[in-house]
Amino acid sequence: MSPQPDRAREEFTRLLDIMRRLRAPDGCPWDREQTHRSLRPYLIEETFEVLDSIDREAYGELKKELGDVLLHIVFHCQMASEAGLFDAADVLNEINEKLIRRHPHVFGDAKVDGPRHVERQWEKIKLNEPHRPRLLEGVPKNQPALNRAFRVQEKAAGVGFDWPDVAPIWAKIREEIAELEEEVADGNQRGIEDEIGDLLFSVVNLSRKLGVSPEDALRGTVEKFSRRFGTIEQRLAESGRSLHDSTLKEMDALWDQVKKEESGSR
Image (tube, rainbow, N blue to C red; front, side, top):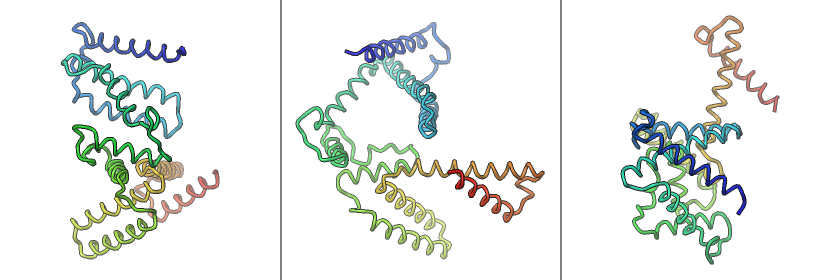
């Protein structure tokens, strides 16, 4: 066995020991008062920090952020162990067994003909496992809506409920835009909300078929908008102006200038 797994085993055992010490009666008061529920917002925050590091390709930071997420996993394992529910070994066994069970083409005799076949096989195996919820019930409801839409569509596609290609999705998007325009013309606020939801869902479908994460795409666009708008604000300030005493025409002109400069620097 190579030294790397040995070191990983030693460091993971060390982390488990540190967490047990922090949760001990004479440990840290803050760590001792935490619960599974109280740690939820911190786990969500750490997960987004991991995503931010990946987006920026900041791999030094990614190493640290992944450690923070791992800390939360160990934290939850320790609290569960104290309650007699499960421990870190049970968690590791669960994921190990799942990976082996759902990869029969690697650990068994099954044959696959590409990544899409693997996805369909994965969903089929999940449906045949005992105590499994209905197909779409396995998608967490409290994740960002774009991600949830993507995963719902992905799971449905995994059992064959999917458009054959992108052509009908373009038609569906145009159809949803027309229906939205009708609701806007009628002033039907509830209908407008429904149709905007349908339109976004169709755009997510297009993203999925084109191999693009809608969450990543929108996050990138928000960052781009924020960066350009921040530059507009900075340039106005340098000329003794503010956003509030500038006209839309002036801000549009600066926007076009910033956009052109960014395009020229590529």
